[in-house]
Image (tube, rainbow, N blue to C red; front, side, top):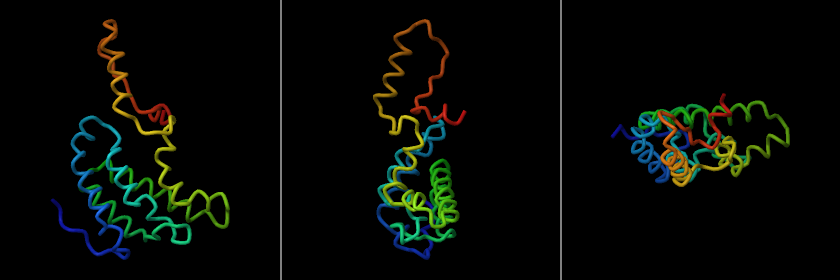
Length: 166
């Protein structure tokens, strides 16, 4: 296990039991996430439960108002347990920071920064707008197993996320 978290400017964030749980989940899934090159959905769900996805949102919009160095420290802690989880968290916080920086007085941006919107932001990027389920994977596996003419094929089951990137 790594060293304990340093005291942050907003200590209630990373000292929360929910964030500690997210760190444990991230560490526990890291090998599987790397080996299978998959999205760290368990850790992201734990971060969402901890309220960590809205840490960079200013307090006036319902977030924690965390400073960039505090977010960087949280990213470091996550990345030291699961690099993919740390990257997802960092990319999300960068997007939030960019919106905060450039939002000005735009009502659209202010609505975008509400805690509910921030929590749903990652899922909303997936074209099917939901996390995958074991049933989704099982359906793809069944399709491959039932057809003996399909050989050596890799099927990506990611709700269309790869298609969106391409």
